[in-house]
Length: 333
Ligand code: AHG
Ligand code: MN
Ligand code: MN
Image (cartoon, rainbow, N blue to C red; front, side, top):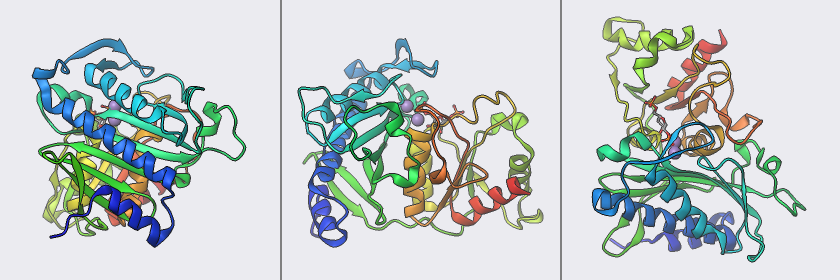
């Protein structure tokens, strides 16, 4: 079989759809290279002094792991010099990171969750990196946080890398979803799945059940109906999976179908859910929609949400279309 590299794919995709100009290609290749570096660090584990806590807190009050900090640094450094970016924003940094003056300023803005699934690092379970690409507004000279406040529907590219038994890169530029596997010997990304489509029929759901007592009634109803199994209103048995790395849960759903939920709950109305709109919900929603699935916050399409602030959190329901539509309808009743 002829191997298609990420570079070849990007060049051919541009010829076909005219949606990956050279500067965006550079951006994607640089991000992919950074993910390769992160993958390498992840793989070293205890041999690489990358496990454990960094003994610092991020803007959201979460204790940072060493690998959160390392991955953030890798992505920042890789993306500064290329001239393709105007600014970056990260889950791990309080404010945006404009490109330093010594480099030319580009037309894109990059957002990332450098290390998703932090709680899984030290126990050798799949983790990942999520990224989202926006266009800088016309005429922007000095980027500010306000320039990032664009709905997810404006993303020009999004993707994630998953560091699991295999390291994979899943990418969309708005014309379907494609999947690359890292050839560790060659150090190259090879196209291994074309035009991924989320299976329609599903019997799998993903939610952190330990929060059940805090849920709002529509979520309780939806999950109860699945738990009732064959003799319940859904007329079939369901299976449950929760990896606690969004990247890994979404990757399973892209390949096997299912629904992923991180709802808002009764605990703290100022924090609707756990996941972050700009670094997690938007890029994953873009990918899932491009793969024929759906993504809502329980009421509206995630990609239609007008962001209020950089680190904003949102409830997330995403995956197989019919399931997302069902739980969204329960919220609207
Ligand atoms: P992060 O490691 O970037 O903070 O994200 C963790 C997120 C997401 O990946 C996962 O789905 C969820 O948190 C797990 O939450 P629980 O701890 O409630 O299981
Ligand atoms: Mn995350
Ligand atoms: Mn993270």
